[in-house]
Each structure stands twice: as C-alpha cells, then as structure tokens.
Length: 342
View 1 (cartoon, one colour):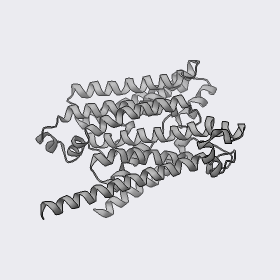
View 2 (cartoon, helix red, strand yellow):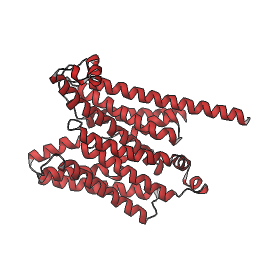
View 3 (cartoon, helix red, strand yellow):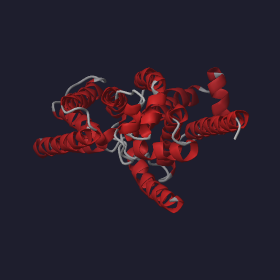
View 4 (tube, helix red, strand yellow):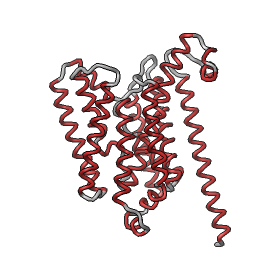
C-alpha cells in the first residue's frame, strides 16, 4: 500500500473519530437540556431554552427553579461524570486492568469515612462535609501512591494496596456507624448513596477547575498512554518511563476522584463503564479515548440525573442508586459484546 493511500486511510479514521466525539458532545448537550426540563415544577423545554438565553423572560419562581436548583445540579452531573469517566480511562490503561475505576484506590471508602466523621462530630458550615471527604480521599490516595512508589509502582501492587485500603476504610466506617446516633447513621447512609441535590455553583466550579487542570495534562501524555496500552515492554522499548507515567496518572486520578466524591458522594459504575463505551466507539488512541471517556461519563451521569427524577414520580432518587441499577446491566452487555467479537 502506498504512502498516499495510508495517509488517506488514516485521515478517514481520524475524521470518523472526530465525528463520533462531536456526536457524543451533542448527545450530552441534549441530555443536559432534558435534565433541565424535568422535575416536579413543570418547565417546558421552550421555556428552559428561553430562560437560559434571557433569564429575565422567566417569572421569579421559574427563574429560581432553573438557575438556583436545576442548573447547578445538571452542571455538577456533567462535571462529576466527566471527571469519573476520564479518571476511569486513565486507571484502566495505567493499571492494565479493564475492571479498574477511580474507586480502585479506595477513594470512595475513604471519602465516605471522612464525610461520616464530619456528620458524627457535628461540624458546622457548608464546606465542612465536602472538605472532610476530600481530605480523607486525598490522604488515602497519597498513601497508596507512597507505598506504590516505594515498591516500583507496579500495576498489581497499586491495585492490591487500593483494595486493602478500601477494606480498612470500610471497617472504620462500620465502627463509626456502630457508635453513631440513629440520626447520624441515617445521614451517613443518605450521603453514601450519592446525590446531586446539594450541588451549588461554587461546588460545580471546583469540579470543573479540577477537570480543566487534569484533562490537558492527560492529553499531553496521550501518545505515551496509547503506547502503554500495547504493553509495558513495548512502552519501555520506545523510551517511556512506565513507573513515572503511572504515578502521574495516579496523581491526576486522585484529584479527580476526590473532588467528585467530596461534593456528591460515592457514585459507582460511571468511572468503570464510561471508558468501555468510549473505547468501543473510538478505539485505543488516547487522543480520542480520553475526551471520549469524559464525554461518555458526563452523558451517563446526566441521563442518570434525568432518570432519578423520572423513575418514581414526585420523588428524587439518589443518583448513585440509578447509576448502579443501570450500570450493572450495561456493563454486563459490554462484556458479552466484547466476548462475541472475540
């Protein structure tokens, strides 16, 4: 095959993947608008679009519902979903494990432990609970990183340390719940289910700031991540420092996962399933896989937010329950589809 035909074929592949990314982005925007138009207070889509363009066109009550209740939660869903999707894609490549997710490091368990202590100790202030959750999540991931660095940052070592830390945090969480009052236990359980009802513009801004920091850094090493996907030996053969790359990935994943769970609680399956969806659509080229995973995660959590308001009329379900209910059959379907292709 001539160089010209190879170049044309490559251009077609790149063009097709760019179109798929654009389609994912369009689907995410559509899910966002549907999420904004759904809720107990009836707001037609046309009214939502008009209110986004010109808030003064809405009545006072409708403006409060759209701009102070629905929009912060919907934007938070996009940010958290994108953060978890991106973190999941990087984790699965760095650890060479298709079952890896941001919670592989024990982040969710540690964050829940921190939030539980904030509830039990009765810490006041709007930022006390998310700050405690973030501090414990970051402490857990820094501990795993430190241990992994001392042992050479091998993929199996990182996974085992993360699993052990998750069990330890779970045991301490059970102890806290056993000693806590009934009211505190109820609050802990509700927080651990994951929810968007507590979202604010400030919280969403923090999540998007973390995403804006980590995504460009991830894209800068996209070629190295693509090479690592072909195997550690191949990556080392072309001069990539695998251990350093893996530790950098763990640092980014730590920030993304800790910020996400600090504000909305533990939301499972998004970080696990979204990268597989993106990989099926876009392949292994991380220039497309990383933003595709972020978009797939944002789309999944936006749809989960929509479903949480629609499944039981008049009731806002915790979004973590919805992602688990939907994520399990979706993940099983992906596994079966991959098995048939083999």
